[in-house]
Image (cartoon, rainbow, N blue to C red; front, side, top):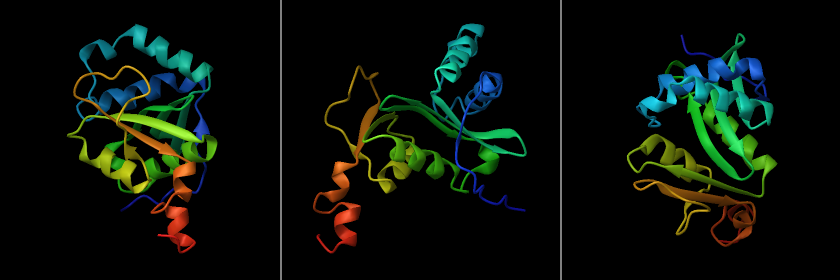
Length: 163
């Protein structure tokens, strides 16, 4: 049976959620991709710190974290959904939540992560010629701006009949 989309808004993660966030990220280590050094107490502390700084947003089902996003000032560092809950729009809900909170967003994606790239493109992210900071080799930067919605060809312009 397919799980129903949660109508809840994403919630800020609590420090107590850090272990579950780490477990979710680690369970998807091949897709993200994560290196073995991510599975350390130091990384769990790093996640706890970001929870304290109010950077992690989560979606829960029956009090279990099934999707998470690390949103630093204008950068989405992680956007992950538990494999059992994919195709339910949880990633879209988290991404749209970030877009409501910011005027500009950046994300980095491995070119082979076709699911993530398709999601970013559907949500009006465009491949960025330059990244807002150091980019690891083999990653591609994507950028979204609120202002781009009004540009010719943008979603808002299309709704208003300006193509």
